[in-house]
Amino acid sequence: MKTILKSPALLVLDVQKGFDDPYWGERNNPQAEENILKLLTEWRKRGWEVIYSQHLSLLPNSPLNYQNKVGVEFKEIIKPLPHEIVFQKNVNSAYIGTKLELYLREKQLTSLVITGLSTQHCVSTTTRMSGNLGFETFLVEDASAAFEITDHTGTTHSPKDVHMYEVAALHNEFATIVKTVELLTELQQSGYPNQT
View (cartoon, rainbow, N blue to C red):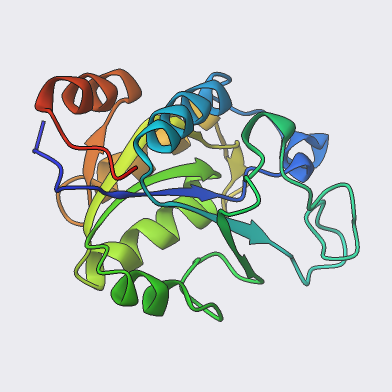
C-alpha cells in the first residue's frame, strides 16, 4: 500500500438515514458503516481531522430531499461529534457549493481518506475532484457502498459490479484504493503521532 502522509483528514460522505430507503434498490458492502466507525474511532483517538458532508437534495422524490427531516439525518453509528465540521451540499461533489477546499487549504491538510455513500454518486465524484485538486487521496473501498443501477439500455447492474467498476476507474488515476484493515494496520505500525 502507498504510504499515507502525516495526519490525513478523514472524510465521511453522506452516511444518512435516507440511504436505507428501498428507493435505492439493492446495495453491497453491508459492513461499510461498521468500517467507517472503526476509522472514526482511530481518527478521534489520535485527534486527527474528521470532516463530514451531508447531502440535502433538491430533487423532490429523493429520500435525501432537504425537506425530509429523517432522511437527511446522519445514521446513528457515525454521527458527528459537536466539534466535527459538517459541510452541507446539494450536488454529488463535497467541493461544489461548500467551503471544503478552502477549509482543507487553510488547515494545511494535504492527505485525505475518503469513506461514505454512495460509491457511484458522492464518493466517486468527490474522490475525482480531490485527486484533480492535488490532494493525496485514499479511498477505503470497504468503507463505502454502491447501489444497483439501470443503464440507458434498460440493463440492471448489480451493486457489486457498480462498486467494482467505480473503484477500478478511480484506482491510480484519482486515488489509492485501500481496505479498512490495511489502513488501520499501517497507522498502528507506523508510529504516526497523535495530535492530542
